[in-house]
Amino acid sequence: MGKRYFCDYCDRSFQDNLHNRKKHLNGVQHLRAKRVWYDLFRDAAAILQEEQTKKPCRKFLQTEQDLEKLSAQVQREKRLKELQREGADIPPGTIEDWLDKRAQRLSAARSSSSLLEKPAPFQYPLGWPPVQELPPSLQAPPPGGWPVPPNLQWG
Image (cartoon, rainbow, N blue to C red; front, side, top):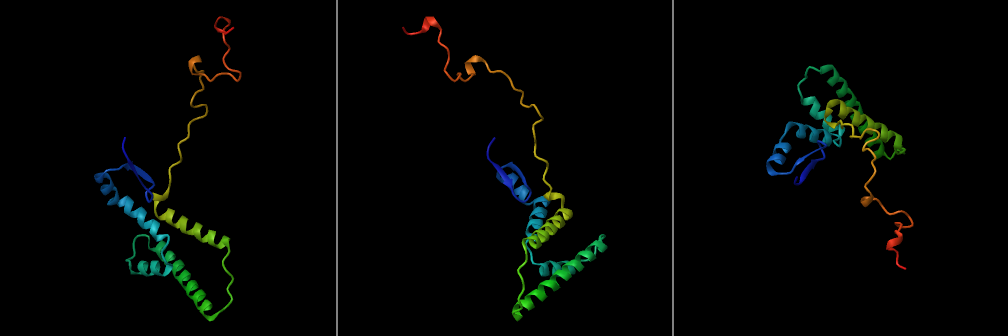
């Protein structure tokens, strides 16, 4: 069958050869999945600046809401940095805050792209594979060993 290449961005594998890999790495699906992955780690200010330079699209209302959220996040981050510079005592964020932000980022990424959805793992149906008796030649010996017929015993 040969070697297989697994793409972490797209969560898929294919036969590894120069043609297949080049075709996959230049494909639209791979490029989109890669962009979604790296966007998860970008700074909110950079995302806001990039989004504001884009022209409005059909989903203008949704984009406008997203821009407002990003703008509010940038303002919060600026205030936090200013408070830290001034030496204000800011309690560190809790793990719950971090988990909430992470969940929001992941849900936003999933809603913008269906590429992150993983198919359900394959499971065998109940009772599969069917249990069958092995022929005596393939069975394991019983705990005390195989019984020796009397005519073959050493005596």
